[in-house]
Length: 640
Image (cartoon, rainbow, N blue to C red; front, side, top):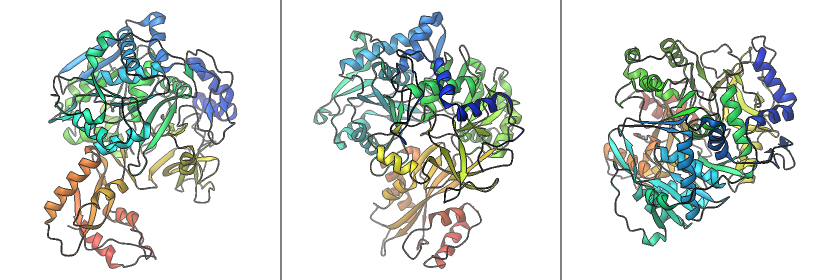
């Protein structure tokens, strides 16, 4: 049933805004566009000439970096704190005013320009959670260049695939990242990726971190110049913001699908800026002078939207935290940051809350801090289970707002929009569709299903501003993957249902992408790695429920006949291979050796059935199964 219901519970500011976004799309988004400073103002909101590839604010021009920095300084707010950096792993804390951050961004834009970066060029950013990552992103936007941030946990092979797809002029990196118990050197990974990649990168710009010793690597074969960030910044000329078309790309962000050609989500400048400004005001209730802390990583979409662009476009103060919810130093770390910086809005993942709860179940550490400043806690990344929602609500005595969105959408599809209206919250539900997102639940034929019936979650086209414009170099791929299953609708790839009051419940993925601590990862890519082992005949990787991470990958492996290897040795080999080829983010640690995998007669491995068995869910043995005894094999592994 469509989420546009007649529920009496949905009245006031939210209902009025949602109805206008559906019935007067032009008026709604042109009004929202007034939140942004334009070089050339838009006269029309939606351009449908290339439908289903829609564009927003065609003909208008702006600069995203100008909207995030310059305009606040010009308005006399240059002394206001823009960025707070807090790193328990290196013991550093620092504040940056809007004027200071603008100076650093303009100067580093000069460094990029000296490296040959111009409007439309791509730049890969491979950095840890440090202020220079934000500076690099904004510097690219200032020049009209297109940044692609690659999470530092990805291996050289994955980085090389993104280099070949994006074809960057330059790579911006640091000597390494710092974990609570180890240091991760980045330069060897960069060097290996450059050797693997077909595309030649002109310049690598390295920010030295004293805590991470650089390692001498012979880079001559790569044909790439290696520059020191600080040295180049001394002589670089600061650059002014370059006006770009609203429809020009701001960034590429690669998401799930690590086999074959990477899937690069393209975000435009105009629609994105409008969506960020509107969402900060109307969903999060955050404005100039407010402090927002998004406890994520700049390498993920949440970090792009609500560590970097959203808060700064809104003129708020954003917190960049280089640490963990537990272990840096304890499970009170989040509450310490909230108290120290008077955070109004905290945004994190259920994984973080579950980790804190596991280490400090009665939240004793929270009582050491003054949390009266906190207005609301927003949660996204994977499904927020009712127990964790109830625990957090009781702890904070503040609204805990589950909201649902995707890398592709760039901002929330469903939420309780606190800035518009405080709507009643329900455990297990991200509430209602955000204005602009016309959500429906349909069956396999595209027909709307009744209330409470589970089906495919779809969104009617056009998607609102700020969502993906297309895939990088892949218009046809975008249409085929997202828009062809149900013409006129965007396929989210998630299943769920809508209750009789219009609340949406997202139940999980309909494909083989698993969500590990908020990181969407392909089980197929892990299977491809496992299959490379000389002892492995066939394998399947499924997502298993995990109390902390939401899901974790588990590998089921069938060995070749006559193989002489212990289970422990095999597991060690496979874990190392996945870590090397995909990265530590996969969190792959569990391997089970079985004599056979359940399959259909056509040879398709019954991964869904396996997943249901291992997770203790009800399941029906498919009539097409080749050997019913193979089900018993999987059941036996659960009983171990």
